[in-house]
Image (cartoon, rainbow, N blue to C red):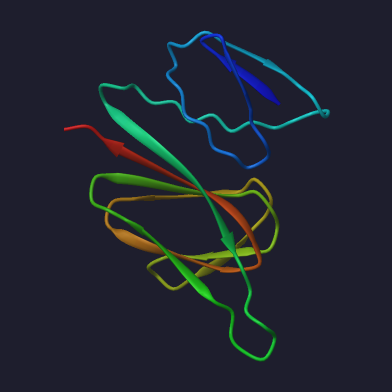
Length: 130
């Protein structure tokens, strides 16, 4: 997809976060068929958001799965959205849930989510402004 923001074209590939102001003039052109976009919008004066793509990789069969931790800070909202199958998320109660593609888990305030398996997630952090 070629995304034009305020007159400047930029090629945006799969799973490539790209931040820009909601006040910008935008246009897009598809270059290789259909796409699915994830947009995270916040009010600038109230919150800011960060999006990061995280690969959750299983260890070799002879060892236990690797576990990634996504820590959520006080005053923060953490969203973990699976972009593939194969990811299991665990919360503070120790219960684990397998995520399907495009499933999303939300954590608010201090705490940790664990991620294991073999797949990719979008980690979205929304932090309130003081």
